[in-house]
Image (tube, rainbow, N blue to C red; front, side, top):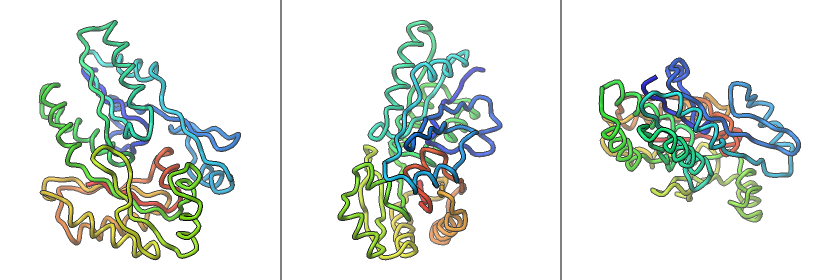
Length: 279
């Protein structure tokens, strides 16, 4: 293969990506108490969510090893890309960078670029899709890197969670705040900074009101929507995901829209009922 794109498993695969042997998934692993999960085709979302809900402990995750990335990069005869979840939340980016350095010591002519998505989930999907489009158009490796990095700069990520327990368990939300949010049914509307960290945009009482606010933020902040692809991922709530997608499409006209169920790592963070939007 002339090129490969190695996307860590926090990103979701479209059916078209699954059929393309040049798109390689680098699985992260998860642990809930004594139970271990690999974020690949064997991942059972329902079982994972059940065990997370039953456990008083925070689920843990581990990024793909440098060896895995290196072997995946080496499947290309000329050049390779990696797309990882934000370096602010995972070691996946650093693991891919180490693999890049190790392989280029053996094959100095090999061109490799690691994209820090500064997002997660469906944000990685859009970046991988952009690389595919530019490769199909015959663009050079250097031009693709420049174009995709500029594209990442314009991406905006939003999400609303039904369940705040994972954020509470991993220390991103205080016990008091989580309790009040649960008792009062307050749902935060979250976003990602340009650096890839998460922050609270707004809040609302009840999931539906929070989703409406998120839709409003998306519509207000998008630039050049006719040139963009709307991506929505949901954790075990396809009707809710479709509702959010359709509500956004009523407000803005985009080039295309995709809707996918969350992969394992995305399911860990989004938890049952969460919805993520990237545009």
